[in-house]
Image (tube, rainbow, N blue to C red):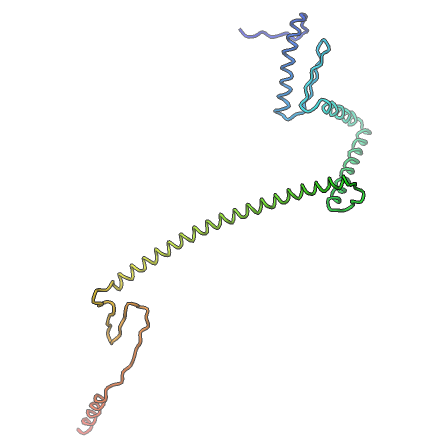
Length: 238
């Protein structure tokens, strides 16, 4: 059988009322804690028992929760009145101007200006702040340089690997050219027949096919010239 519906009304029996209060108080505190954690809410819970005992919970501090509540309530009442609304925004504008002035003054002091009114303690605090800022800037710069060096080293490794692959391809092409050269010109025999081949008209080609070929014209023999002249004379006599 399911649990029956409980009528929401005051429990007359004091013992039962105290037991129910303890159980539901613990459950309410648990729900408030879960709401603050899960939803990142600022929660404040105040409980007074029938005997006047206080139970409270605040995920930040009860004082800050109450101050925030009072401020929010006051602002709400002010916004309901047009005159109060104008005054509220005037105060907000004055607060923003004051914050801007403080920031500008702090910036000038960080730049080394308007330091005459500062005490030794203020100057020491300003110096510590500058050292912390400078340390952070240097750490960021070193990190960027380290990342850049690692990136360049990685690119260098990739380029080196690509060069090795190209070198292997060049060697393979060179070997293929040597094989093709051997097939075209032959490997030569023990007597050196192919080492120095004789070509027509007295030209020769050695192993180095790229060596320059020297040509030389020879003068005709004297007797051949005289025989030709005699033949011409004989023809004229006839």
